Amino acid sequence: MSRSLIIAIDGPAASGKGTLARRLADYYHLPHLDTGLTYRAVAHMLLTKGWPLDDEAHAIEAARLVDLGHLDREGLSAHTVADAASRVAVIAEVRRILVDKQRAFADRDGGAVLDGRDIGTVVCPEAEVKLYVTASAEVRAMRRLRDIEGRGGKADFDEILSDIKLRDERDMGRTDSPLKPAADAHLLDTSEMSIETAFIAAKAIIDDAIAKRSEI
Ligand SMILES: Nc1ncnc2c1ncn2[C@@H]1O[C@H](COP(=O)(O)OP(=O)(O)O)[C@@H](O)[C@H]1O
Ligand SMILES: Nc1ccn([C@@H]2O[C@H](COP(=O)(O)OP(=O)(O)O)[C@@H](O)[C@H]2O)c(=O)n1
Image (cartoon, rainbow, N blue to C red):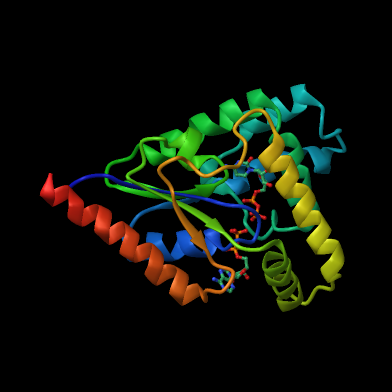
């Protein structure tokens, strides 16, 4: 690969952006960063210490301590951590600190795949390929339910659905870096797509962008 390839993937909870990001990173031999884990890490630190989620000073301190090399996906996977993450994610200074770290990750030779809520709009507005992955709230809630049950847990579909809708509202409604497709993002509605079909569709978009380089 002669030029850096940055692939920015955004979308709401359980739309499949992480699964797609990991597969694309593997296919194009690029490093991958799940930026949601950085917000989850901040939330987890506050929850563990018993600090309120709107305690800005401690949230900022926690954001400074986030180490991209040590993000524990399993330890941060809980539903409560995801909800708490969307609360600390409204703090502008927390975002600024985490976005700096995310940009440093993206700015490496060769490129990278990043997924989150504001990658195409704020973190990597210069990304060569931007994907906005979505699916209906019901489909996303069903995917999350299967995730939880697959790990031996129990959950209620209606509760997950209302949590997902609430988090969508919080993420799309905040003033700082709200979740929305970048103007030049390709929309991928995976409601009726398998993981494989979504991967093939994304790969076609990326290969097309790479092919256009040689025409320039
Ligand atoms: N296109 C798809 N069809 C069916 N299930 C999917 C699809 N994409 C992802 N999944 C499953 O849905 C769940 C949530 O996907 P994930 O990639 O973690 O979403 P996100 O990163 O957007 O929160 C996972 O269990 C994943 O295997
Ligand atoms: N780039 C990002 C990534 C996540 N987040 C926040 O972090 C929360 C958890 O993100 P996540 O990607 O781990 O959540 P899921 O989509 O996996 O459920 C989101 O609901 C957002 O509030 C953000 O604000 N910006």
